[in-house]
Structures are given as C-alpha cells and as structure tokens.
Image (cartoon, rainbow, N blue to C red; front, top):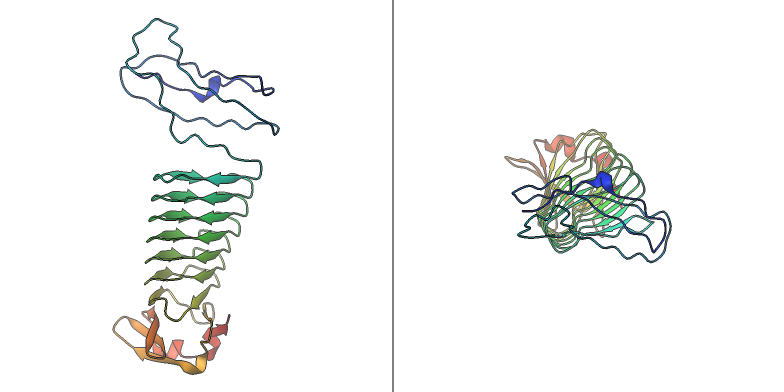
Length: 256
C-alpha cells in the first residue's frame, strides 16, 4: 500500500541544513499520488530528501516513487523531460522547454517563451504577449488572448490565433491556421508546404511575403476549397471559403 502525500504538511526551509517531512494522513490499500511545490526564498545549495516513515508499524509493500522532480531557477526557466508531461507557467515571465515527448504546455500569466520541442505538443499561450515555438512534430498551438508570435516549426501543425493580434510563421509542413478576432499577420514562405488559412478577414488579416516573394509574382486560382495562392508554380496557401476578388488585392499583403 502507498501512503497519500499532502502538500500542507511541508515545513519551512530556513537554510541549507534544514529539512522537510511529508507526513501521511493515513494509509490506503491502493496506489496513490499527489504533487507539491516549494519555492526556496534565497539561492544556495539545498539537499532535498524524501522518505516514507512507518510510524504505525504497518506493512508497506512498497514505499516511495518520485517522478518528475524539477528545480525551477529564480528566473523561471522550466525544463521538461523526454517524457509526455504537462508544464504550467507561473505569474512571472517564464521560459518553458517541453523537450521530447508529446507535451501539454500552458503559458499562464507573464510574457513567456514557450518551446514545444520534439513530439506532437499541445501549447497554450497566456494572456500577455508570448513567443511560441512548436518545434518538431504535428503540434496544436492555441495563441489565446495575448498578441503573440507563433513559429510552427517542422510538422503539420494546427495554429489558432485567438483574440490577440498575432504574427504567425507556420514553418515546414502543410499547416492549418485558424484566425481569431485580432489583426493577424500570416507569413507565406516558399518551399515549406501548403498552408490552409481559415477565417481570413479582408482589411483585418494581412499575408506577409517573405524571402523573394512579391505580390507581382503571385497567382490566384479559385478552387473548391477557396483561393489558392501560388508563386512559381507552387501553391503556398489556400484561403478557405474565400473569393479571388477578395484575396487578390495588394492591400492584403505586406513585405516581411
């Protein structure tokens, strides 16, 4: 049987020679788990130990399993592992690295930098302007309420811009960008796949031309899905449920 861990019995750490004890509130004939967080008041070297104390002379078939133990530095850099995990930001300005694995990353408050890393990640921006990097994998990125900068990376990503004014570079792969209520900029790139753009709003959404792309070398074709935007025979993007007469205007484009 495992004991239940409760975070409210954590005693204060005064210096490097202090210790804390997680005491069980009772035994359960099942596997149980919980989490706790402690913030050290000052920098220094700390020795952290965890153990189960059998104060009732009960039979313990197993004692203690610690998983996902992390140390977060004062500047709030949060490091994931190579496993699938969920990482939360704080009220401060965080930098979160998902690393490998199919992670879930939540930016929370603050002005954050979020890295998905390798794997098919789920990333949520916070309420303030964040910079989000999907990394490698087929990621789902939700920009949320901030005016964010989003880089999809490598993979067939889904990007939702939310309500802020976002700058989106989808990257390599056939990506889907669903625009929200903000004045968004979606960057078109050559030789990086065909992107699908949903909810384009003329006069509000801008399409950025990167590298050697110019408006004069673009062609527009009406298809069953919407408007295909091409350059040099390559379809750069499909603007879903749109008409050529709406999209093929220089006012919808800007040079990046």
